[in-house]
Length: 331
Image (cartoon, rainbow, N blue to C red; front, side, top):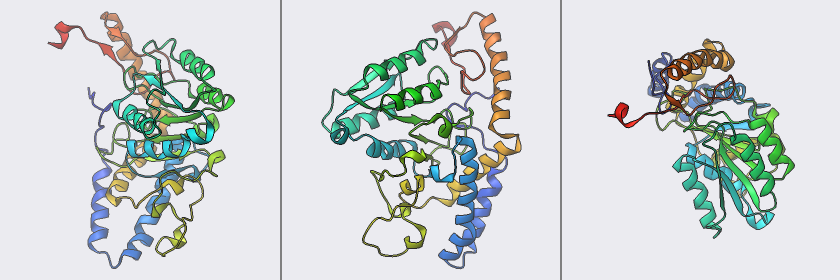
């Protein structure tokens, strides 16, 4: 049984051919513009269409491929965390969250000299987690500008009730920044319909694209009027991308958050993963198959008296099942 997808998934069979094709096209490149026109732009468009399905985006305008997970988190925090404008300087996070997310959030609090403005919500008890998150948003609505949280816990594997949490955030004027590291490729997402303000993801866990592969940013269409806090030349309209222009001409929607060009070999790996997901029936089919395996392992461990951290029930968990091992088993 392969157990390492939580950190880095197996290589899809299609990936090698896609990467080799990208190398061959580069080797026989006639000029840079032809490579962009004949290879890069069509590949980028196809990937965006597939990602839109995976994210539950209304259109490709709500997403873009760009940078690594933590860089993307910095990008959306630079855009959506504006304490000087809103007068709400606190950020809500779950506890535990992965260190990288916490460090990124603390960096922005330090930048605005708000070192004591981090609110943590304990979510180890999966039965209470959703209620505690909603309760904290309602309690802190006058002082908290952002709720920054994972969609799926990397510790317990719980898939939170994002629809309910997003509705609560909108009602209380708190921006929801969602981290999808353990959700992409593991659970079915409907970010647009749920009304999530923005989200970031990586591609090396359940997307199986190898460490360091680029991730992306989702921005709900109601936030298209926001100017990205971090900007770069690939966030400008394509017709002026190679021109010297005095002002930033933002691409419409989330593509305006793209700061620089994307490594074609990263894109080839992502294409291999996305095509594999589609080959096996899409994320809904994969999620149901995962649930069958999950329930089998859960019941087997339960029968052996293991202490299980993860919740049971379809739609309540991601791709991981967490257990606590006693010292004898660890040794």
